[in-house]
Length: 302
Ligand code: EPU
Image 1 (tube, helix red, strand yellow):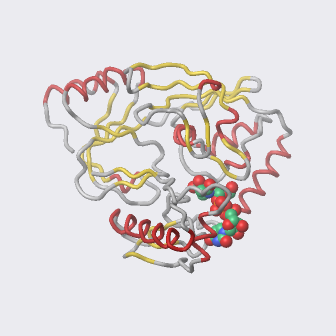
Image 2: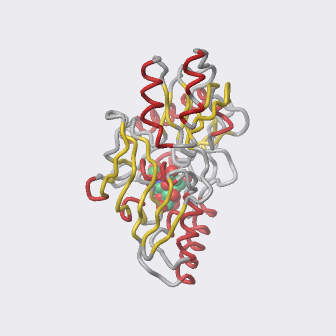
């Protein structure tokens, strides 16, 4: 969607927003899939309440994009504008055993910077692509680590109340790939409390996780990580693999031949192809196991 109303366009700079008209969101997602819309880059998040109010008053639908690593976006001209936090100069600050991290910060960089201050506990998250904000919203996890474990405070823009609040970690529910944040909440910053560990020990843990990941996941292909959540007590990847679906394609969307729960874009895959592949696999697993796989990747329709 294109913002054309002169009043809205004129209001954006004072709200710390840089307008990037007609962006192809495929360039902002790890899947390399996504249609076209105006991107509003937020440079001063204290103005978010006014910005969201303005968009609502003008009837402009919006969606908030984080690191773009766990989202499948429709093709073509989108009927909503995308909001994204602009990168920040100093996005990570460490004080004794706590890290204060901006939501826009890269998760992997956060893990390594904390390690340099002898703060561990997040080794398992090292290869999870994306921003800290996205990791928080989904309670990202790998190799026995979940980010929620370490959260003490979160600054969040609450969409329903149109205001910025600081939540205590204990007041947020962190479940498997799910949290109690509302769909229209926007993560802004987090305070993590981390266990002290010698740097060498943390680095060893990081190396081990990197090796495991390299051995089992298609890291150099365009994907959104695991497509489905694991059903209780089972592995979606193993079930899909056992059905012989590795390498199965719909157009240029393909079940990875390395890890069957990663669906990769082998070229110019469309959202439609990726969704058809997801449905095909879901149907095959339903037929074979009577299990309904639930998507982990978030789908945004046009
Ligand atoms: N397996 C197969 N074939 C496959 C894939 C896996 O047989 O194609 C088997 C493995 O051999 C293993 C079992 O399935 O015995 C589990 O596989 P893996 O260790 O790769 O873990 P996973 O359950 O498939 C989860 C997370 C990953 C995370 C890894 C490592 C989910 C949906 N996935 O995968 O997270 O990196 O554990 O901790 O919870 C993500 O969230 O996007 C993601 C990739």
